[in-house]
Image 1 (tube, rainbow, N blue to C red):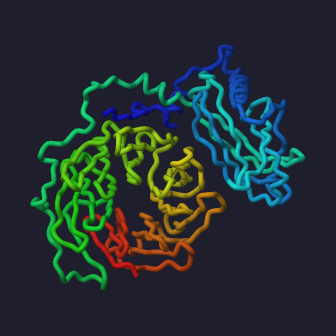
Image 2: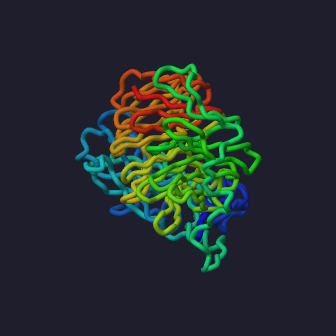
Image 3: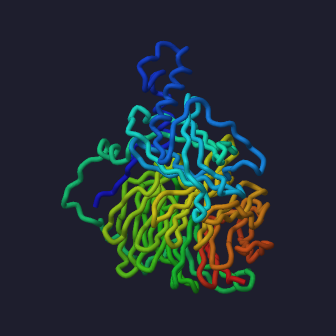
Amino acid sequence: MKNRNNFKHGGFSFVSLLAIISAATACPALESCRSEQDADAIARALADRLQDALKFDNSETKKGDAPQGHTSGADYPAVTMLDAPQTLYPGQSFEIGLPTDFAMTDAIAGAAVQVDKASHYIEVHESYDSVAGRVILHGHLADDKKLIGHIFHVRIALLDDLSRAGNYVTWDLAIVMQPDAFMEQESVREPENEPELHVFPDAYETEPSETSDQMETIEEGENLPDGMQLLAESGSQLESVVVDGSYVYYLEPGPNDQAGGRVMRVPVTGGTPEVIAKEQGNPLRIATDRQAVYWTTWLTGNVMRWTKSSGLTDVLAEGEKKPGDIVSYGGILFWANFGTGTIEQLSLSDMKQSTLYQTKNGPNGLAVFGSYLAFTIAESVQGDQHSGLIYVFSLATGGPRLVASKAGLPRSVALDEGRVYWLDELGPDGNVNAQNISGGNTMVLASKQNGPTWITADTDYLYYAVSPDRVIRRVSKKGGPPEDIAPAMDDFVLGMALDNNFVYWVTRNKLYKVKKP
């Protein structure tokens, strides 16, 4: 099996792009630079180069500056959110979505697009798409490889039928190398007869009789509220939890500087915890479906599977860079590579792996529902100030859409058939937020939640932990006052899961469950 790691040596990450730029000469793409005094002229020339390379459907190029923007007033079409790719490679097609709350949508005639410092701009003629709830610009980047390694600021505004512009939003665009081209440079041909899967030695098979020397069966009599049960306790830190109809699965990551760590399970009704895999290289996140349990290993860079019917553990992908959150849906496995900023997908039927999306910064939480995959990026802006991003990716039509920016610190996300939900985990002002997948304004379902973490969802409610307050809480998807459903029993919750009747969570060294109200 070919385990693809498209960006194994840095590739397209935003950090490496900055490194490329800082390491380049004063005039990386043009030969006319003679001194530092020419820097501004070179920047303008490079901006014009990108302006010429951006090819939009139904557009025309105009000299000079784009029309003056208007940041307020109901008479001008305002962009409420920018939905655009963060990177492009030469020759790539793209789509830009411009949602608006402008009442007179019939008067929208298109958009103005201008690269910062460019001497001309593009006027794109596109009407409002009432089905999508936005103006959609279609285009492609011309095959100009001298643009690779540069980051540009592009201003975009909607235009009305009098060519008047609303507010301008900034598209921060990095031009990168084509993924396949990068893989051809970095890849090494693997033997054609390499087996599809690697089955671990006997030590990695199910060990139903093995119980951790630090684990013990939880007996009756714990001083817990009615409906709450302590399922497992360990001398090691626990992290991440999932549940099926019979078992709760969770991780013992082990010390960060050792390639240890175990994958555990315990019956949902309670009992003796079992080790199903050990020496796992700091396992970080876990997922399950009817057939198997899956997890990522932070230190060794593997994506692993334990098959429920056979009890065998095998490697699905190796050589990944700091793989984190993982989800399984519809025969496809998705995971986030924090080290390369990629969202990876693996078909469990033919074991073919591919990169679904490349981000500038490492992705955090993942959630999948129906034909949509949601993921979060907790971008650091300055110091402890964050401007997180929430994306929704259509698995049917392709292409990510930026659902929300300035989302604080969103490390976990939940999804249903119509909405995406996330937590702003920044201190006492942390909010529980919702956004329609189709677009619109962000809805705050609960505010000032004092650092909420680990959002999960069922049909009617969102469940999350408030570690500083040591509680497990829920709030209706329709809004209303949040409800405390159980004491968290610790000030550090490290994972949460749901089934039809119970909520499960792990603290630093214990696994609990509580009956839903």
